[in-house]
Image 1 (tube, rainbow, N blue to C red):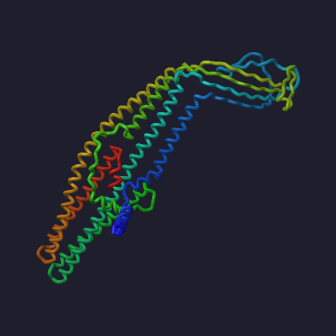
Image 2: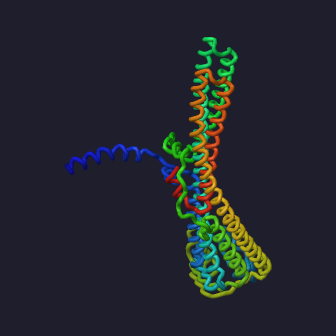
Image 3: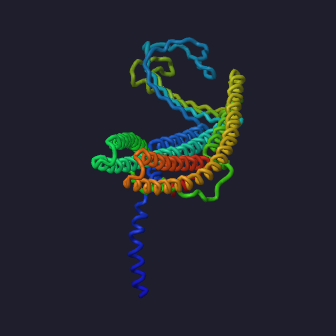
Length: 455
């Protein structure tokens, strides 16, 4: 008997389980939007770019190696003395060769290592600023994802709202069509004037026009939703039922804004980046101590005794090898003022961002308290509009029966129908306002779990 009861319970539960599996929610749409929407991919690419930038800035702390190689053929005229081709480098010509060709081939190659040993914290601050920029890109992505959740919720709510309005106009048209048929029969039998038949027909045609309008609105909202979803179809039948009968948000509500909210966190990271960049900019005015090492190889067609060969192969003879090592200090004195001004500019940007953070936090806290107060009252309005719709439907059915019996006129019945239509429309508007408030609260608290699971 126990085995039989167990099998009966399983058989009874399977259809219910299958039905639950087919009940799509807003949360089931979000997983695909987050995976495939190009905007999310763009933010992820920005994070990767910031990561590569951080690695590149770290590379500035490594020794810099420069290498060159050249092979030339030309004249060798020169005079004794010195010249300065670039700041910090100079060369001295030798004496004019004694005899031989007027041109000679030359070969030259060199490698120089320049290592900035001490920069008074400039490279360290640049590295910290690059890390702050990476953290900012991560926070920007989180803020974008949060805003995308709200956009998806709003578009989904708009689709469900337009679908409810479409169903509302359809019901109105069906009621008017029934009245038109009844009136037409009564007019044909002489119980009602012909004007009643025309009035009923006119009301029905107007209702069909409203149906066409909301059908267009629903299709437009559906297209906008598919732009985020990235698929051909969305099953929103179960959500449409939940839209008309929303669940109460009875979860433990957060009354204060979380300091780690993605929007506030992005502003924090931006302020930190400006501060570290300003410190790095000011330290750029300080000198740098460098370790320099080099090696040079040279071949020439001029022999030690002064004879010049014009053959190209002789340009690889008479080789010389030289090396150098040293330590030096460089200081760009003209950048003292400009770098300090740029640093102060970045500090002011950081201060502005901090003040903007305070403004956002204060405004978000006020909006959260206001929205939560509205949600409570909005849900109470929903219960009243739902009751009003039920009572209006019952009253309409009673008056329709009286009209069929000839106890009331057509104008009285149409007036009752308008009251039913208004009650249904008020319930749809209240439902939409309730879900929109929940979406706004979810953005402020960065918690879309209730909305994604109950819509």
